Image (cartoon, rainbow, N blue to C red):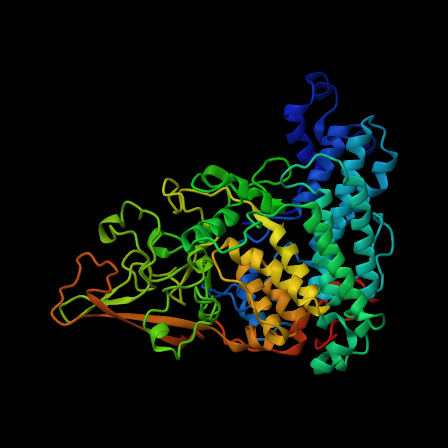
Length: 626
């Protein structure tokens, strides 16, 4: 389910239900509030800004995730138009699935609302100057955020900085990449000034969130994909693109861009506060796993640490102020239902693929290797604690089963394998696609995501319950990673290692000691693991220009089989037990829903045929037919 366009009048009505006096309600119908009334009243102006927030939608908690467009996940259910993208078949007249938070038309609707607020707030007549400045700062931040969403997908886009009237000519050319970055940064600088010293409310923009978004934007600006010379050298599609200024910098000092990215990230580190980043040595694996779970829960789980909320710089919260929840029971976020195991009556949406699983390091910091017999025999042992906090694998302990399944699995363990039953037959795991519980919604990779699913056993993960957890649009660790990357690019390796180790010590991993290219490789994997399922990998792979080795390497899955040891009797009901069963793990290709490949046109998404027809001044992205 997804949030669609709401009118600010509806939100104003919701707000006034508790915030206004009855005399006003009785004298002015809320479905006929005039524009002047809106900007003459503080609560109404605030309600208007809440509507601008509503275009954030569910963030990454939609049923289909950006994770399934890269080497994090596979989307289980066919017919969702995922393969149109991952197989390189997307065209302007045949676009693949896009979240509303990236979709061209939806983002421009949001930008139009922000433009209206930016135009009207300076001349608004309500008396609260502090509120006016705060709302104006939020409007500048939101406009910058939505433009940032567009440029990450499409490159340079038309810059529209005012609310067009209905009878105006909407034809406008695309601005260059540099013009867009400069515009976004200018908006963020204004937001930083306006929001300085203003109250901070979870889910609303703050000075820190504006600083953090600026850090992200400048990091992207310095990256390979957006340096015209580097991009053209690494891509035939880009080298032959006659309008490369739309997607990359064609001039300027690239080192200066990296320095700007480093400075912006450092401003975030100085202004904010991360979660448990003051350690001088790794915590225990158990504490490291719990720390990472606490971060994923945003401090919102009853079995976590509420102080972990400090990690969140900009979040999508569960609140009626500027979002409308679905009509499911408890009205919360359905990430668990969308993605959890089918043996819990969940839908197995965006399941981890083997490539992600393999990239979690061993506890000693070495790489996992299928050619290592010890690793291959027990692939889920002694891994980075973030693995156990992020991935549900065969034999992993999980929450109590639903009542109709409990008798089949009293141990509450994930079952994604196939187990000898002692009578010459095979018992299909409860969480496989051959499950006796449900067989339409099992994982095709034999993994499930655990991250972002509340582990509280008192909150059953089934269709009757929704979970209230924040989506991390921006968190402090992203700024740490941004700072480390820029430091590496500038040759300041010790500084980069220092900050990477802060992240690693928090989760129980040993210090990074590499240098040169090995350090960059380690950094990129650290970013992949720390920010898994947070909509970064898709963009990171492109800006680093490595997607041929991410989405381009297809989908790997795992087959797990258990045979009885000589003389052993099977457990009835089955439970994972290495003293009774011998387990074998076989990596296989999965092309059931999609056969992934990489095409250089996939660096940027096509502008749809409808948008091109509406505005004949638009230039299409490289590799797509006009």
